[in-house]
Length: 155
Image (tube, rainbow, N blue to C red):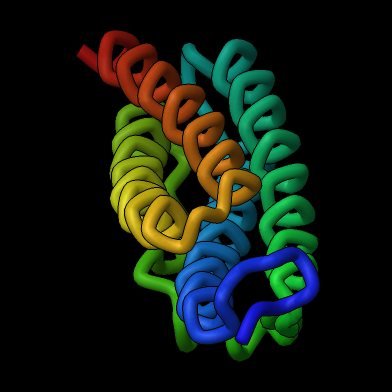
């Protein structure tokens, strides 16, 4: 049996589960970036303050896209912060204010997202879900470049 967009219902359900996991991780990642943006201190304040704003704006857009993709697949996105906290592998980053700590945490968070997106890419490919494949490919490309740039910055 297929859903409204022609994807097998069981495969759409599996994809929605993976996407909800990604959504939860994005929400915590987003909040970590907001905290870094607000609380960064030190000689790198101006450049990192701006960079974290850029990254949390990207994350916010991705959150909306992932939630809408889950809806497109015929399922319900998580929408309670308690669910995000429970499901997310990415943890809250409290009281990290220095450049090295904020950048290292951001790199680790991006690595988690990329790993989850690669798994979703595999599941979506198996389901012939080009929409999700396209979305994950874009995220992975952008995040790999950001990871490289942050790694170079933090050396």
